[in-house]
Image (tube, rainbow, N blue to C red):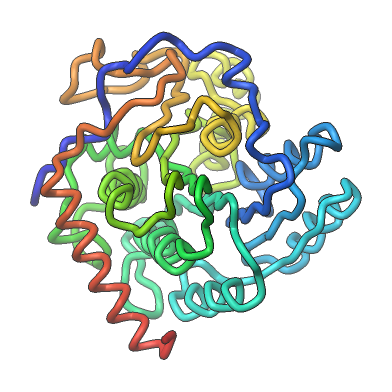
Length: 347
């Protein structure tokens, strides 16, 4: 097991102003791709873009998700808002389908000014599960598909373009900043920490953070283009974990929501909309935007002391993840992607 110091650092400046947090000017007239766009945070991002003033909206939104019926609903919303739309369907735990849709987008689309890599899951099954390529499902759905898409589409991102990754502070609070290279993506290893699937989920999210740090200087980004990761806080979505929690607490949910600081997707998507849309993100690359919970007592926050945590400042902080561990993850992931590309004839 190898330690990668998690993506937490001293705040880099003053708290962001409300105008900076609300700025969405970078979306104007752009082509935006959103994965995992049919519910939860991804759907909320689409809703917000469609609800912008007409003169501020993206020119085109490209939708990538599994459910064709829900994709059609999202596309209809975009069309009603006067936004050109195209849709691509793929099961994002299936590597063959990930490569297929990556190629379809490359063949059909002229450019991707903004890429919102939002797709992800947290399943609460009792034991680790693997998909068709014998890889653990959270690893593929949360981490590998993100790395494949970023790698396959980076050449389509023009100068000044942005790639955003929907991350999670669980890489710190549950995984404790330790990336288990021996079991990452395998059917063996720890699975549960209080909640089923918690270890697999948090490991995949920590891997996102570490990969993004190294990708900032290794992904062949165009001049001025960037890739950053964000944490939306605790958001009530349709993933298994939250639905199980909501059922468990029953009528006490409103009180629990207030005490714990749970957000609805329309609020939680603000972190992604900020890193992709605000001019305040100019010059930031390979960094972490933390829009975490209101009360830090809900997060163990170890092994970094609380004063080094940028939460509630809505801060954007450089990663303190160990550079050598990040490089190892990036290199090993690149080799795995190359191997899978050959296996699935995705040349």
